[in-house]
Amino acid sequence: MEPSSRSPPPKGSSYSRRDEDKNRDRWRDDRDRRRRDSPPPRGSRDNRYPDKPRPRDDYYSSRRDDRRERDRRDDRRDDRRDDRRYRDGRGDRGDDYRRRSRSPRRDSRSGSAAPDPKPANKPNFGNSGLLAAATNTVKASDGTSTVLKYNEPPEARKPIQSWRLFVFKGKEDLGSLQISKQSCYLVGRDQLVADIPIDHPSCSKQHAAIQYRQVQDKDEWGASKPVVKPFIIDLESTNGTFVNDKPVPASRYYELKPSDVIKFGQSTREYVLLNEDDV
Image 1 (cartoon, rainbow, N blue to C red):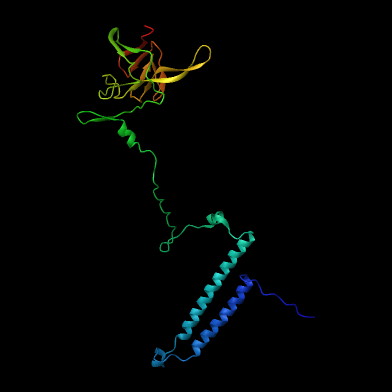
Image 2 (image 1 turned 180 degrees about the vertical axis):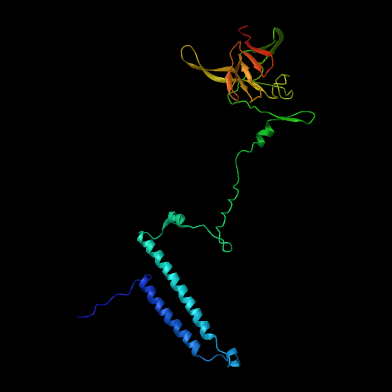
C-alpha cells in the first residue's frame, strides 16, 4: 500500500506558522552556537582580559529566550484573533465589537483610567442676535440708545378704517388719540421710542403694542376675505395689560373690538377704542 501524499498546510494557517517558528528557532540556535563557539574578535575585551568570565553566553541566551517568548505570545494572540474572526463567519469583527471590547485607557504612571479628552469647540453658525439688535437700536441726539423689544409681523397692514383712543381718568375726559396713520403703535414710558407715552411708574418702558394685522374673516355666506383688524400684545410688562378688566396674555396677540376699555399697569387711565365710522 503506497503512502498517501499530504498536501502542505495552507499558508497563514496555524500549522504553517508552527513550522515557520520551528525553522526560525533552529536558525537562531545555530546562529547563537556559532557566536558562542567562535573566538572573540581581536582587540575585544575578552581577548585583552582572558582571566575574566565571558558574559556572552548568558547575554545571548537571555536575549534569545526573551525573543522566543515574545514571538510565542504574539502568535497566541494572532491565533485567538483569527479564531474569533472566522468563527463569526466574517473577516472583520465590526465597529460594534470594537466599541464593546474597548477598555478605558489607563495612565502608565498612575495606573488609573485617563480622563476622556474634552470635545473640541465646534463653530456655531446660529443667529447671534447682534445684527437684529443693531437694526432695532434707536439712538437719541444725546448719544443714548434704546433697543426695541417688538418687531412687526409679516401680516402687519395699515388700517383702512379710522380708529381712535378716547382717554378718560375717572369721569374726566382727557381727549382722544388718532391711531390710524401707521400699522403699529408702541405704548410705554420710554419717550424715545413710545408712540403713545404713559408716565405712570407702574408701566414699563416698552409696555405693550397696538398692532393692525391682516387676517382672513368669513362673511355671512361663509366666504373668506382679508380684513385688517386691531390687536394688542403685552410685551412681558411687569404689571400687565388689561382689556375690559381682564389680563392680556403676555407675548400673544389679543383682538380688540370697538368700545373695548384698555388699561396699562396700575394706572387709572382708561383708553376706549372706537371706530370713527361707527361714532
